[in-house]
Image (cartoon, rainbow, N blue to C red; front, side, top):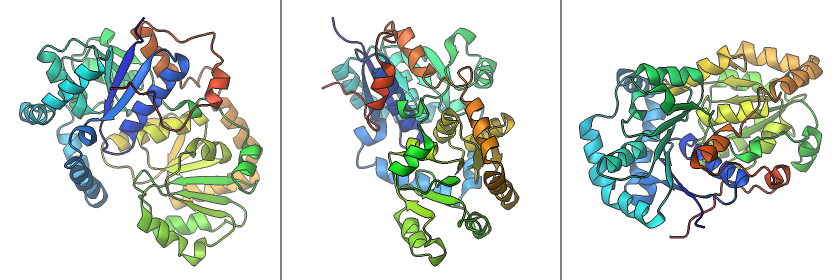
Length: 395
């Protein structure tokens, strides 16, 4: 019998959309190896010359004019992509997207970004019969995610479901699954052993993530972070921002045995387990990974728009705070004086009724008619999960 096939389309605007696609693909593969998945960034795959220029322009706008990004988000919040934009996307991607779908013959298409969702929706309007699911990768629902041809929406919270139903989407077409995270984030590993494996000191540890592009914060916050580095270990993960990494490594203040400065790494899951506090931008994927690991979070420089909504959600849930010098000092003091209390709070966050990061993959398999293989040694399989790789369908 032919194996079921899932084709996941994303876009490279930020790291969260594609990260969610790979996470879902890996979760599906782990729970049911008989289902094949393929992840494709639509722009990069079909327009490899143009896509990097568009992505570069987007990065520069986010970095230099965040208020403009926020204004655009808010003014278009209740609107789907306009017909002119959809027509342009149709002309750019129609032929190639059709060819990819015809070649791979998926049983289900899942889009983790509004652009491919709009493209595939238009293909469905032209006769494509493959079911289309849209996976919203934040804790809010911008109007650009909405297309009448979508067969089902997979969303992070009941609140996001209510936003969609308020826009006329039938409730039975919206399923609350949570945002998927890679199976490496499904369980927590021993902190002491991980610190030894990673060559870290076994002392209170803070993981500071600069985002996929290595964005960073100002001097006052940096001074607060480094004020107690004799007693608190700092791990900086700066993504792909090589200039910032070089600048930080040349800073004499950061030349300390309790400071690590890293670029891109595939071991964020281990670093979260080895750490006691996460400082990060409130991107949808990073927030969800932190929640899956039960680590308390401090958020800085939320991009106006979806990141603000993510920040609001996790702060209201009591899993995060907004970063400032006073908050840094409070948490650092707690780590030094009330360490056992923090550990106990973290265990409570990981209680089974609160900790179900595999929910999205399980739900998709059920809808596909290929439920999770309950006889599989899931714990053993998790230990073998490899990076951000999905089983690929050979063209």
